[in-house]
Length: 224
Image 1 (tube, rainbow, N blue to C red):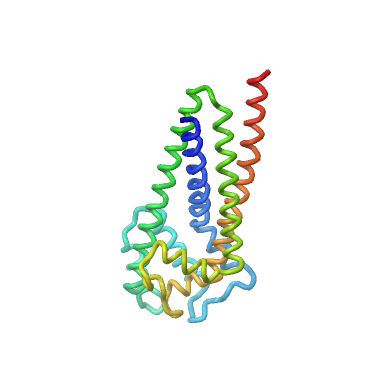
Image 2: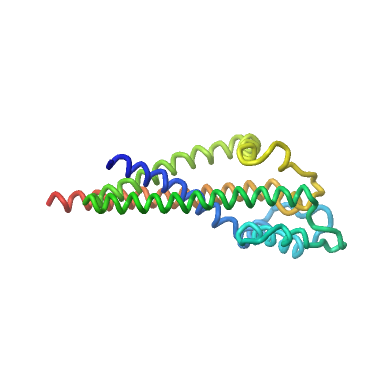
């Protein structure tokens, strides 16, 4: 039972850290930061910077709040045309479904991890909780370093493969003139991936180190 409870905490830690970093990046600060970076590609089809940012933030709001697609379908470009065509709207619906589902899984993982930690505490094994958290941090650190390496050496393979896991073939591919590509060019996704990996690596390292230190102190205290 002790090993099983530790495994639950390890897996929960991985899911919570990764999805927490994804959600931390899916906020209005990110496009503001990305668009303002030197070398970030300017919009090539006449969209003003303020309009571009407003539309990007609307997409993020759509993902984070319980809106239906009318939030996006009602938006217009400066020339009066609709901001997003039907294929783009359908893809955003698909993205929201995946995003909400992953968030739900992360919340369930957090609940399972807390229950497992409570069970270990009731068994009089608080040091095992911190050991499991440390192991979860180490596992997350290893997986994210491998993922970051793949992103660095084979970005296209990673990007296509990731979309292949969550979306139907070709439903996520658009023309360069489509608004979604104009708002979210490839460099933005590269920056997003880098930020997510960086957040998770730092958090996982701190958790792995802190968890191991606290675990050892608890073990020593129980033996004295």
